[in-house]
Amino acid sequence: MVRAGSHPPEQARTKAEEDYRTLLPQGVATPDHTLLVLQADGEPIGNGWLRHGHLPEVTYGYSLVVHPEFRGRGHGRSAMAIGEQVTWEVGDRVVMFNVFGGNEVAMSLYTAVGYRVLEETRSRDLAPGVDG
Image (cartoon, rainbow, N blue to C red):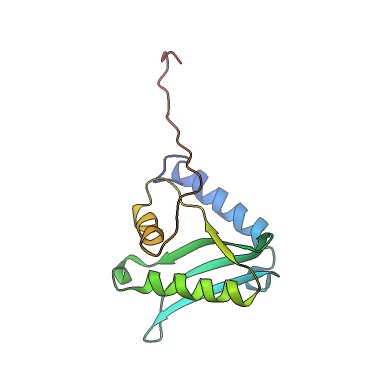
């Protein structure tokens, strides 16, 4: 949110915390959700969440993170493959993600593993006195 320019840092943190409380009211035990814990050699290297049945037969993936020091080693691709396998196993047939603008790492990963853009939204901050 900060990188995309939609929120300053403190507002982004507050919104993220509110979103987690709303989307994951029972944390890892929230029904119809899967927590992916990414590890390499027994060390945590990232995580992600999947929400199954977001729409009919659609799993919504959010908060996929591979810590920066572990990027570029195929862990993101592996996480995507595992997420797709879990999605299939719960009976969903589509995986969707939202990516904030400016998150080139995520956009490149999703494109590289075959995801396509369905919708794109853009914004522009207007300076005082700018005519529409």
